[in-house]
Amino acid sequence: MIELKNIFKWYNVGGARTFVLKDINLRIEEGEFISIMGPSGSGKSTLLHILGNLDMPDEGSYHFLEEDVYSLKNKKRAELFQSRVGFVFQSYHLIDELTVYENIETPLIYKNISGSERKAIVADMLDRFGIVGKKDLFPNQLSGGQQQIVGIARALAGSPSLILADEPTGNLNSQQGEEVMKLFKQLNEEGVTIIQVTHSEKNAEYGNRIINLLDGQVKAG
Ligand code: ADP
Ligand code: ADP
Image (cartoon, rainbow, N blue to C red; front, side, top):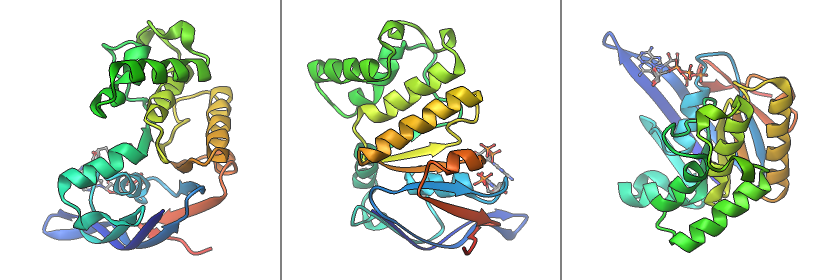
């Protein structure tokens, strides 16, 4: 599903290159549940952003679903990721001015899905995640755990084949965090590929493989 070859990312600081990612080579198969771990500043978020086309490397190639990502025109590249990838962030990134219902609906509007179809999909998500009763509330009326559930529902509304999650339980208590991990596990069993950045060994145990980063490189073993 994913193949990164010789990925480098750097910033020019005071005329010198500071490397964030140094020669990353990775293969990730469809159906995997991967945890990216490593100390703060090791390049985890940057790697996740590159995988989701939110950021681009300075060198290297990326094949996603057999497509040579960096040979695609911007518009085609954006479309490829928009239709296949759902993002879950640590701080939810919900839109404060929109209700739970509208937050989940938003990506579907961008995808030009018809009104009646959107209604059906959002209703399905609300039902599946047990938040039907919350549909008219605004994010600030929900607990952190509930907001993250809405964030996941929104990520899944577009039926992505890949979920990218950056510290998805970072703002949750342990019980809420466990619920989110169980949900990921269930989605993974249904065939969704999951890549999460996490500091938690416990969270990583839900996955099938750990990728350890250190100073922008994949640690062997
Ligand atoms: P992690 O997610 O593992 O904490 P990041 O991918 O967020 O690591 O960041 C890796 C490194 O890149 C950090 O040392 C960070 O300071 C550096 N970095 C990120 N963005 C910039 C930038 N715009 N300019 C310079 N350095 C940056
Ligand atoms: P997080 O805490 O989520 O890992 P960071 O603190 O690494 O976030 O980065 C927050 C923002 O600041 C990002 O947009 C990143 O690109 C930028 N940034 C991080 N480190 C640097 C840096 N050394 N110089 C300039 N920008 C940076």
